[in-house]
Length: 221
Image 1 (cartoon, rainbow, N blue to C red):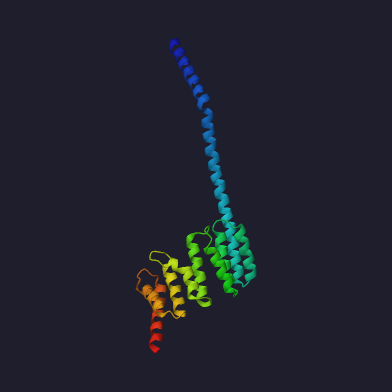
Image 2 (tube, one colour; image 1 turned 90 degrees about the horizontal axis):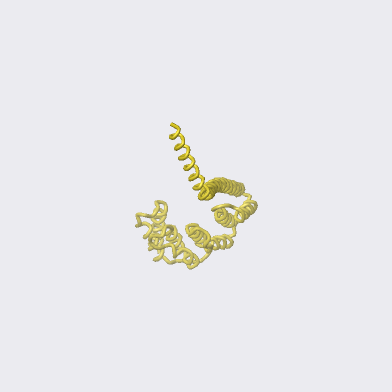
């Protein structure tokens, strides 16, 4: 029994010495890895909290600006949107720019609104989809205030098959063609929309209305 006890103690000492040696060799690395995991996890939690907080704050400011616009306080709304454009988080700055351009138009400054939308469309830091929407918004204003070429310059690049904005782009180009007396171009564009099964229902309906209007006008001449 004594021998067994002696051998157990020896084995335990050997295991202990080996464990200490392993720990001396790898312990700092294990501690460093554990600390890195904890710090990284804490950092992610803090970032997510900060990000959510920032987005929430910017969202509240954006909604407040919209409320001011709904109350007819356009100058105050524009000031709030301008501040959000500079200090907002995430996508709120570009949303503020888009809304500000709309308010400029609603105040009666068509040229200023077109310039604002053009600036957004030319800004490569803006998501491509928002750039295209800005081009369309400028083009719809220019149907009334500009020339066919003004409209075409902005939307022709997005009328191609497969472009997600092609239906709206063809519609605004058709309207500009009709206003400019380019009847054949208008008929072609609206017929293209009417025949396209992929066109949104509202755009297809308006295209058919325009076709009836154009054909009726041509027939009376």
